[in-house]
Image (cartoon, rainbow, N blue to C red; front, side):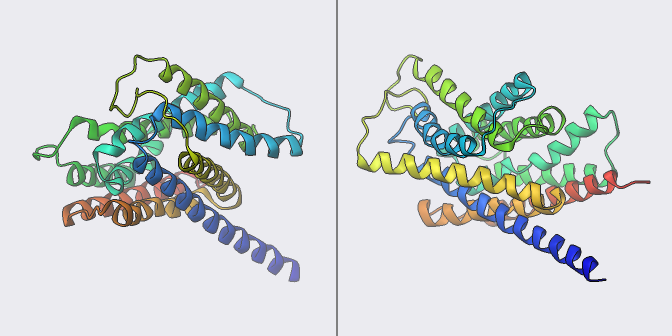
Length: 305
């Protein structure tokens, strides 16, 4: 009897740890993205990729060295996964200066619905009815946020949706081809690819006053501090997400993953005085509901008949 209670108590504690970890992760990553948006005029995107990842590599490399991790399986799939994620962040960060952070975050969080659809396609299974309801709900939410017939619409505002598609593809690939690797190794290789892609972007013809291809910005104590903070937030966010998905049920963790949208709204109001209208707020709620519906449908499909 006692052992049963202990096991139940341990499971409950693991779920609590997982929920706390994913909330900390979304707080860290959303704050890091807000800083990226704030520093867009101070630091070219390619330079930010290089410097932020070098800080992350320092910490990840130290951790892996102390853990004496040496084994890497499926290196080709890991590199491909990393390229998908780098392109995902590139798409997202290009859109950030052009739209409110909260709206970009909401559009990006169509990813859970896309994950279920891509996984169903790969398994050659028709998605469950709740998934189609989630797709419709999420589509309506995106329309309310972007309002493609509005005067303020710009096609570049579709980039968060592209980043959601790239993220969903990377997560399905991770679960199918990279699941036997240490999560820290995946994070390490991702940041190495970030540095390499940053170097390639840095070799593009320079265009002054552009976010993507501006010249190297001279570093000063303020910029160095910003880069270190971004690197630390990146590490905390990645490690927090790893802990969350290791400790807790993925469907439970993914629901709390939507706290990123709430944090995005908070940072948008605090740092940029961005106050979305009621249509945008309804759209964000619809996208959140769509994600929760798709995740519950995914859990239902994974239960034995």
